[in-house]
Image (cartoon, rainbow over all chains, first blue to last red; front, side, top):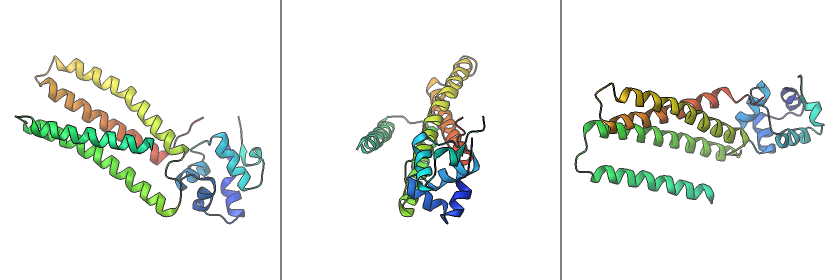
Length: 64
Length: 131
């Protein structure tokens, strides 16, 4: 699974820490998500997508 | 509240353990060394976790998110699994080498602590690819 968190975060002018605070996780978790080293729970994926005002499938791309 | 109770329970176990150790009539140098080693690993690990939590609180971010919980769960289960093999090896060698059984148990506990700390550190650095 890949995601567009880094790109969307840059577009919204948010730092990793800003986004981490908004979705109530640690900054490292956002870092691992961006690097594709961690797949989020459905709840976290939903919260991140909501911050960017997008659908989950627009942020997280399941590539088989 | 649950975390506070667990924290108090762990502290009590450590204090009781140290008291039992100190009140034992004869403490060999080796026993003391082993106990100190385990204590250093446990306290060191606790201090590291506390330090990270204070750092997170200072930054205003979450102290216990889903990745931290997953890493803790994964390292606990993995270290338990690996420890089974460690005890198997220890029990195999217990009849072959001339070491007191208490000493062997001490080495086993040290091994378990090192295995857990190693796996936890590895996952903290490399992340958890939970596909």
